[in-house]
Length: 394
Image (tube, rainbow, N blue to C red; front, side):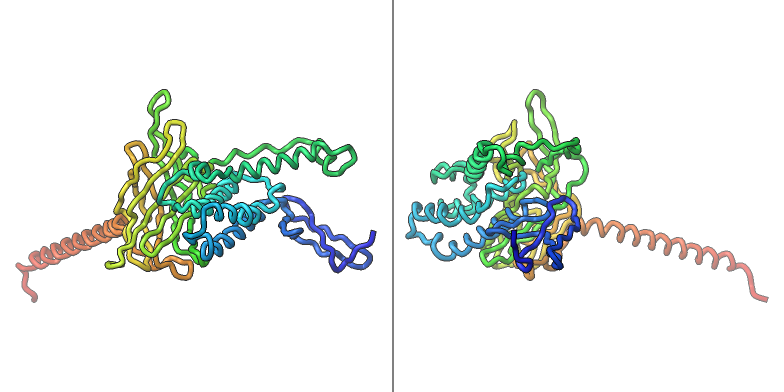
């Protein structure tokens, strides 16, 4: 076999980085941590999440380009938009999907990317609150994850039918020696917990790729439900398996958090008063599919988050937003800015009243103690002066 040492590289597939130098003659072949072959990214750790993130990013860039040109044109028929979706968007998004091994996070992100385009095709937005299944049914489009699964099963059947001696078939039928390490506990987007939730970092980008909404906060759901008996559960929303989506407009912005494969959809609607340059959290809603709760809860109008354009709202203390009589949301360590984000960073923070009150308490206590010390010192000086009043200096 002959090969070019100037064009050849090596890679070791292992969970940990392993140095393995291969030498051809006097040439040492460079070892790579990642390698792109036919447009597909391979990593030494064997993970596919980086490649899936790349595909989602490429598809999102194409969607932004199309949205500024043809997809948003009203004279373009829905049939033509669906043709663009099937012939351009889906192939870019799912290129190399036969190799994908997806976690719940990747599934949720792919669903969010899929529905972002289909909503534009249907002329809808997140504010219309139409379920993804209803949009697909109305457009006559099958779920993207079903398409991926069907394609993967087709290649799986091809692998099973391989005759003996073919390397892929032998690897598939091989039985590794030894024992597998104990499996880690499955990660769920919503877990029962009594401790303070982990703080998530969420952001929304606009059509030119810059961040237009920033939100850092921990979220906790208080849920009352009844299967055989009424129960009260406190669960934390886990940021690592929660997908953020939404959009920004001149006087409104929406942050949608999706978890459990679209079983839990939590949306925050912010509005801006252009006259006063003040923004507020105007609506919070929860759309969930749980064993004892199906469908959308009525939205809550709230004035708990108030801020000034170009500034961020901050509240370190726990706040509670009541969504329905059976569901409320606790927020922890909130910092959010839905308008006027510059340089992809928060503006000057405006603290909530709860934080201000917490700062006032030690100030008031300190002032009271200082006043008490002053009173005691004054009383001591007056008493000392009176004790010497009957004496004369000799």
